[in-house]
Length: 184
Image (cartoon, rainbow, N blue to C red; front, side, top):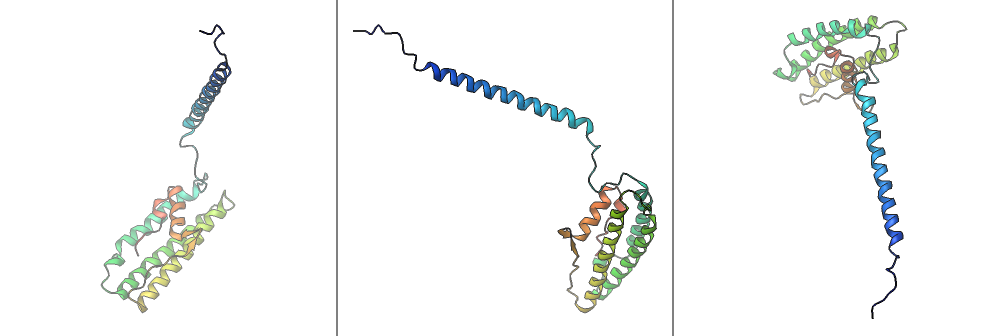
């Protein structure tokens, strides 16, 4: 005999919880989408206006330094590339010549640092990093005179080769000719 009892409503609470769960997910998806749209509305108009930490807003030093570095790099370019030297001793001589040019560049850069200028301390540190890098070049030239298989080893600072730090500061501040020459 067929039952005359009304259909079971045991599933009704589950349907309600499934529907409210899907509504929560739907509202969450809308909120996340709106947040992402809001982020891009905020970021895109400011694109290019955020500068790296090493950026010098006072452009006096980079403007004055770039021609000094450009002259030094032009002088280096007139030297026979060290890697084309016939002997290790010849290579050491070329490295010494290049180092002398870079020491002059470094000496000429120091008075260009704006006295008390914004971030002058960082510019001075960058110039001091050149001192260590030039010392590494001198050590390499001396090592070549004793061992033709000597390798150019750089001081490690800030967790990496010193030239990377020097080059980063130069590149960030649009002083491309003030990066290390890579001639050794």
